[in-house]
Length: 93
Image 1 (cartoon, rainbow, N blue to C red):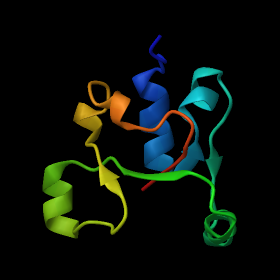
Image 2: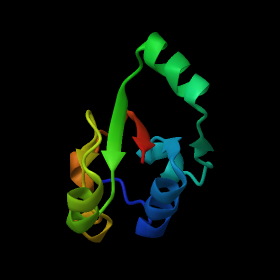
Image 3: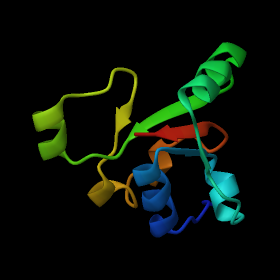
Image 4: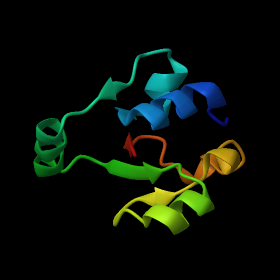
């Protein structure tokens, strides 16, 4: 059974630079805004992190990419949602 998460919840999390799992968003748990220090701690613990860049192609062209992030533009997020690992923490930029 596919996990159904409102696109609006993902978009809000994405624009705020939040971290969440798809399951936590589906259960109406709030995403958490990370500080640089918190992200560094998460990286040291080495959990499953998925770095998601939701910018559109024009923004990528103008501003460049973020190394290590997977780009799924907001306009394509709903149809490409299956590309996001279900149990990973999703860190957006």
